[in-house]
Image (tube, rainbow, N blue to C red; front, side):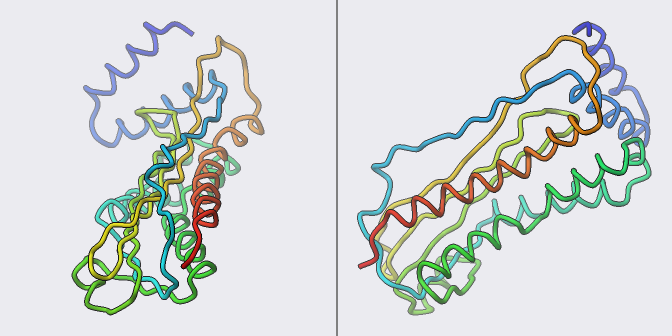
Length: 224
């Protein structure tokens, strides 16, 4: 496939009415997926940030703005592939793959479960002040970012971090879990639906990998 031709397609999108832009984005994404292959990577953070130890729970979990924003973005993405007319350009199996790998609260619910298994009770708060006033011995601040396949890019990634503080505000350290995969160029060849679905489902896999890495690293930290 000519890179010039692909570039021209994206230029044409800029001049289209809004409802046609969505269709063009979907077609563009089909083209991108149809001529790519995946390479999965995991990003490892410097272990100096990891806490030396953590107090026993219960834990106050702070849901940051990045988490709320990511949930909203995933919700819009999920709704598009469920309900949008232009999503019908895809086969049912492809649409299902997009929907099942963009569940808005997957990571938040996963992190909550991990904390419950480690510390017992988890209570959610939207600010550090509220969490500190709760009197709980440990505060965990969750940050999250999820990047999915769309018309602008095809490098799904998931990043989770938990920053830990004591109730008096003393910083204890941060645990990260992040994973991504890149769709590298592959010169023209036809792809079967099953291959496309497999690649789409990798965006769900990176979310699971990031959560598993976070859980693994949390288990390595002793509870005092």
